Image (cartoon, rainbow, N blue to C red; front, side, top):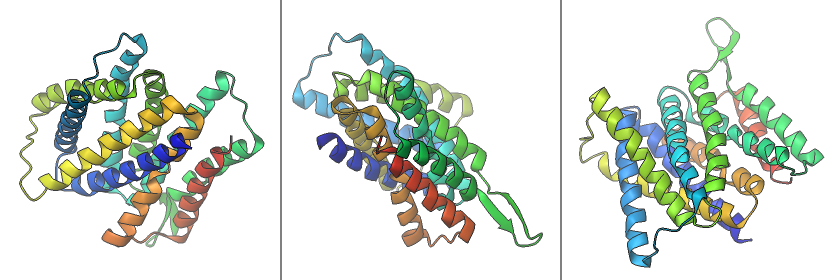
Length: 279
């Protein structure tokens, strides 16, 4: 029961963080947002490790957190870029379909796949295809919604993140989270210097980005702890339901409206992801 509860917390944390990141990426450089949120997360985890006085363990699996950090920041960058140019309630569920990768990874290493899970995968893919289609009112024909390519790329990296972090978190999830978060800084600092992007975003935006960093870090740690206690296939699927939170926030706060075929696709995608958890 604990892994499921932690996965639900991860779902809500990532959903809130993605909403904030998507909205703020429309007016602030995405790299600046990621840098500040990563600094926030690293500082927060550092305080926890200092308070708990946990020495660095001798565990080779921890170093899988290094590529996980790079993969995770790539997933976030692509997702926030897509949310900045497209409709959140359409694109967020696309990124979550990356959960299919850890499910297939589990199958490759001997996990049994139920008929319900297979049906869920088919439904999720079909829903994703429907969700990214929209009707052009001028030409009365279907076209791909803006930002879909970025969301698909994000989905791929989301799946890889789940796999690598599952390996890293086998025994020491708190240190795996710290290494993962620190590795994002090793990537972002040179990028900011090369791209000449400032992290001076102004007092208006700063509280939101700090909140985003806290929520993303707590979500990542909850996932790390959950996957160390439970099955990756179950934990990854429940955690990946975060688009539902993003969709609710975008509808309530932003007042986003989506077309009927897209809403049907969103519902199918989320339903498919939910069904996968039965495996």
